[in-house]
Length: 134
Image 1 (cartoon, rainbow, N blue to C red):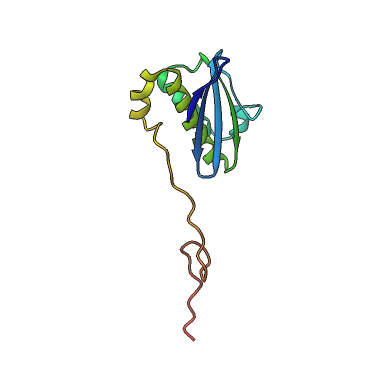
Image 2: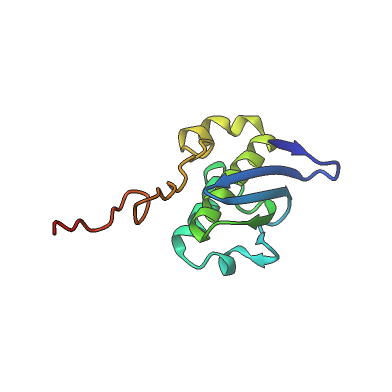
């Protein structure tokens, strides 16, 4: 679900686990803000910061676009992957020629894995209670 708004900013949505990221992108100087904070303050680890920056690095627009992200749900790693997908989709709406390079690096593929539910009579999704012989 990608759409262009009237004020020349481009919108993309990314989801991962229970995190949902709404991304708005427009021409600018390369700043990324997540929920009103700089992205390197919001995402503490280097791995999550590189995940957020990866789509921009691949297409070479690191210093050319401003990105504003509104994210809710999930944990830090799921949120970073949701932002990565949202930025990739916004870049695709920005220029359709980016599709091949984004697809080749696996940035347009949705990771649909979710947490398995707990079953009754067990300790967790697959963990059973300890067996007692007598």
